[in-house]
Length: 161
Image (tube, rainbow, N blue to C red; front, side):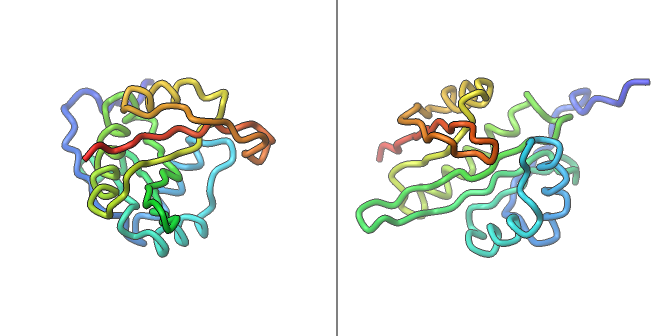
């Protein structure tokens, strides 16, 4: 028997800042999405440090995805850092990730960021293509970035004001 598809009806997506009550569902999505998922403590710390840049997307109350970001000030430049993005399997390829990234980018602009950066596995060509469609470009690689020693590709997007 097939699971019902969430694509049968148009999405009724709402995006709001994450709250502590969202964390258990975020952790559950994370465990399905990644081979080396963040644990609950890491999400709670992220929410505590960067509450203004941690968003969840819901469709009629169901968690459709989340994005956790940070803001960094080097003294010379302020930039956003996308630390984690995941979409619940039944909601993938429906624009949820794009909506989450756009909302996070809006917040970065309000906070005075001139650019946004992220790291993605060099083997995750699907994610790289997703970010390219949103205006990100590869800038350099970091050797052995991930726990399994896989390299990361750093991608950035600059805002034009």
